[in-house]
Length: 126
Image (cartoon, rainbow, N blue to C red; front, side, top):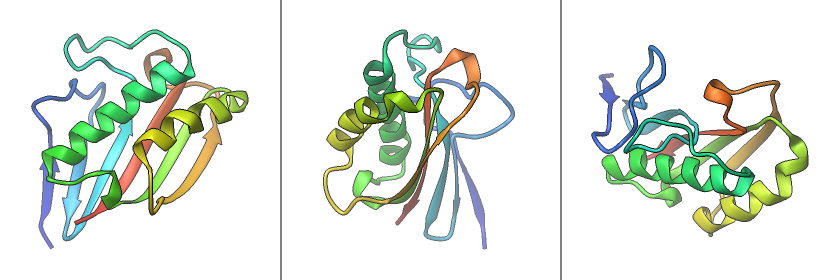
């Protein structure tokens, strides 16, 4: 099976030695997205709602680059630095995932790259 590296032109550059996504067959494995502004590469400053919205816009960019939408997502993993932000994160998440929700895990972590408070990775099916 061929492995295709995905580097959307509209995305902020990766902050390490990884790609935005990798396609294997009919699956797209998307790296975790943090709230980076694609125009500047800088972290978007704001509360969990502001950062979650930017993260999901970044996920959307990767999906759209491959002709996919949030309805193609079969699994998501959400990393937050404070589980007390769970309800507020969910409020924004529900604006992007509106039907046929993917399987999901949400995990509290000690820290995220560049001081982000949320990171989301997804697996999508073509």
